[in-house]
Amino acid sequence: MATTRFDRRAFLFAALASWLAGASRGDAMTSNPVAESGGLANFERRFAGTVFRPDTSDYARLSKIYQARATARPALFAHCTSADDVRRAVLAAREAAAPLSVRCGGHSYAGHSLNDGGVVLDLSGLRSIEIAADGGSATVGGGTLAGMIDRATAAKGRATTLGQCPTVGIGGLALGGGVGPLMGRLGLTCDNLLSAQIVLADGRVVTASEEADGDLFWAIRGGGGNFGVATRLTFRLHPVTLVTGGFVTLRSADPRAMLHLYADLCAAAPDDLVMLGMLVPDDEGRPLLMIQVCHLGSPEQAAADIAPLVASPYVIENGVGRLPYADLQTQGPPEMPLLPSTNRAGFRAAFDEVAIDTLARALAEAPGPYMHGLVPLHGAVTATEQSKTAFPLRERGIAYGLTSIIAGPESLSPTRAWIAELNDSLRGSGPGAYVNVMGDEGAEAVKFAYGDNFTRLLALKNRYDPANIFRNNQNIRREPFH
Ligand SMILES: Cc1cc2nc3c(=O)[nH]c(=O)nc-3n(C[C@H](O)[C@H](O)[C@H](O)COP(=O)(O)OP(=O)(O)OC[C@H]3O[C@@H](n4cnc5c(N)ncnc54)[C@H](O)[C@@H]3O)c2cc1C
Image 1: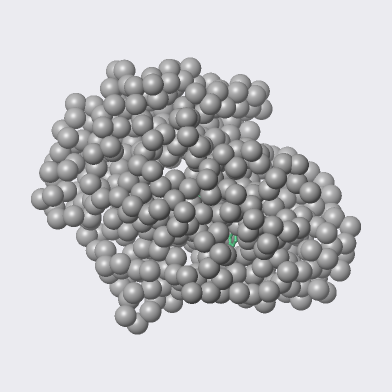
Image 2 (image 1 turned 90 degrees about the vertical axis):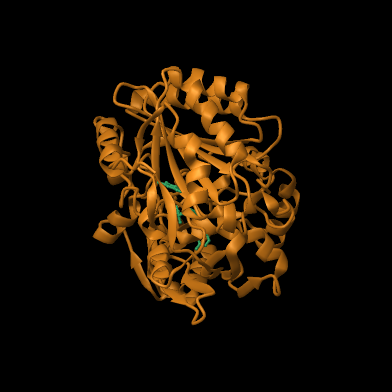
């Protein structure tokens, strides 16, 4: 298989650097006053752990999240190093009637890991990885980053499905679902969750699994941070060493041509092959489709399955080769620049003529730079019944996350309008979206995202968190919430 070296990092960084020149970076973050919730004066006494208040370097560091547009200023960050710390922090915030957020990897597109005037649980003190002696599972702390887990499991010739970005937190990733290069064969991150220790809204600490607290275990596999704080998670591991993978970049004079090719290939892809796509503009504004290929089968089978892609006339860079899975997982930038963006998400069972035409027309009129993720769902993901876990998308098709970069204050409203219109036109007739790539879209959008699973999620939310203590997330509630 021909392999052209493609320095994706250099490409992405160059593109992002130019986009960000002049972009609004949420500078207000450093100047907004903190509107502290009244009862937090005694927080330190109740929490009895390390607290970072404004005007400290730790506060400034933790206030920076991937969503650079977020300007919220919490009263404090509570640095948690144990489930007991989390329990005391939840109860202290609750007693103070203060807003509560959870910050794991800080990659929430909606900026949910901050809040105004309240408490943020900083889970960076909960980073740990223990691999079982038989290599069959890994137990990680609730603040661990995905890349740390990939590295530790790779050293044992094992892996579980994680995403493409090493700095995403396992808490947000796993509880919302978790899509990544291994999912066609091995399922989602949440499909590989065996058990989780959860601190509930009333301060109880429980371990949920198929055997115990089954309803809670159902809800946390896709239901996000709505039900409590995960302080330990155990995942099934699989033997994964060499894969066939890398990035292939396509460009066609009419973007419809490359999108058709991609849609056809995804519709026919075997379980061993995952092709995660990302649409970005090149330096002249023409859409590029960057595809991360990962094939778990034999080199011969991989070559045969990938041939129609790499032989396509639209390929401008082909970085596919045989490599350790861990190396594939480090081909993205080690630290994504923090981006001010507006986001929408949806799902298309059929990525057909209508969807492709809609997307191509919209890209031609984009008000600024974009990074639209295309996530083909098939294989082990769609072999699982929709009712088995809270994760709603179990039908073959393409989930997408639309990200438009806000290039300056004046571009906020046209960009928002453009992305909302694109999403409305792109969505298929059925419900569904991947909550982890949604923006701050409101309660109705969350209900729409969960489709048939929403009713059970709402009932469980009312059972486990009736006061909606855990509300800074893709929140499951009736609108208006009582
Ligand atoms: C650059 C980038 C790349 C991404 N790549 C992928 C990808 O390849 N695959 C994929 O599936 N997703 C991907 N995502 C989406 C990602 O899964 C979500 O943004 C996820 O919520 C981020 O989790 P976090 O812990 O980093 O974020 P945070 O902002 O820290 O947390 C987000 C929310 O998750 C909840 N949460 C986090 N930790 C816990 C915990 N321990 N217990 C309870 N609740 C918790 C909270 O509700 C919190 O508000 C990507 C996002 C970005 C920005």
